[in-house]
Image (tube, rainbow over all chains, first blue to last red; front, side):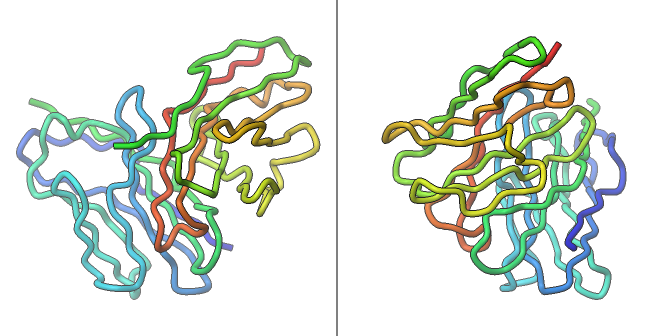
Length: 114
Length: 116
């Protein structure tokens, strides 16, 4: 069965510092991987997705993630944090094929300090 | 940008009561989903819906849950007899085609259900 683990339920960085949010997955088949962001009082918004093309995926708002099969990881990074990045971030996995079923991690709350 | 809208944003209901959560998916989307997140837990898939029938459902989606597309725009989740453990944020989502791989699944802002 597929699963996703996000290491760290809360991450705090200073404005301008590197953001690193960790995600490890478990899947018996090559997965599709996603990062969603939820800003306060808003819905889940897709940041980026990996669907077996390039292993380094660029998303919106300067975020990117790298798929590493050997480490079963899909960590999310941003070189320089902005105050507006404060939100909850969810990593998710989906099986290839015709399914709309996403398996989510528990989420990581990102705090950005001035 | 088109968006998925959900009503109500927050509902408090007594245990045993029926609740209907409403969603308006993006207009040209054909696939609809409900997910939920119990406080402090993961976002969980409940059900997917296409062509007026359920495509897939999780083990959570038991007989007390039902979904319906009563008209051309709304997509509803009904909980027949609510339990305390149904308290959660319920997310509606939609996509143009089935599958998360090549298609973006768009989520609404969620409906927070509190059962007392």
